[in-house]
Length: 289
Ligand code: NAP
Image (cartoon, rainbow, N blue to C red):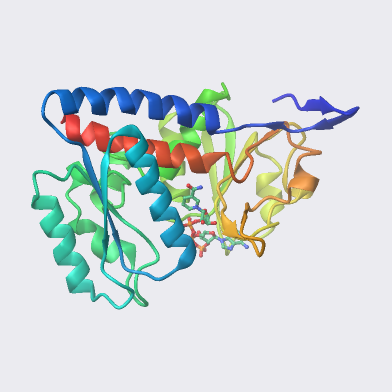
């Protein structure tokens, strides 16, 4: 992708997610309004079991975004000491409740409890953030189902900015079940050639610097610097680490990488707003079914 020239120097074109997110929210509002006219109030429930400040802030931002498109959003706060069986029963009850269309189990969970231990109790039809292992299996098999919203947001953002995927080499840094692995599966489905890197990958830059597209989802600010990126490559920064001044930091050293890459997503304002918009759009999908 071609870099932008600003004040006589080349910098990576910013791949904003804001316009795409606004368009997804606009379409979701129309669909939720039509559902309400037909007698269905679209409802999302976010289950939390944490006192982590940034997680609480994120859940409130989902509830606010849901309200803005006409989705009724409840936060089921089970508290940071909730037991796995309490969380499990809550997910089962919500899965059975015909007035609830979408369920999100927010991380982090209480110490020692993994998302993958409990997400199997979210009914796949209501699993709007693709957390149930069955949803990931469907994603791998190219079958209908909800992919994790962040992974889908990466693909939506690349499509929105007309980045070709077929036959291109994509290096993904991070192999989590919620981001890195489903991004790899979705890209394979689009016939990209995919390399997945992780904490045990040796000489990370030898993989990333050969890629046409680099997707970074680690949670370590500054991990990816100029030497990790080929000239003109597209870089998608999924990382979001709270900074000391109350902002958010991505995984990319922006000052370095923007001099080399052709295009780069901003943090905040790149993958994040598209992820939130897709959670709402998935909830409308679930209500329509
Ligand atoms: P995670 O579960 O902690 O996974 C991090 C991954 O990074 C792991 O696969 C880990 O490897 C790998 N890793 C750690 N250190 C590394 C290193 N030095 N070099 C290469 N790989 C390394 O995190 P996550 O849930 O995927 O989230 C990743 C980031 O994305 C976080 O900043 C999170 O806040 C952000 N995020 C953003 C959104 C959004 O909407 N924008 C949504 C979800 C997450 P191992 O597997 O070998 O341990």
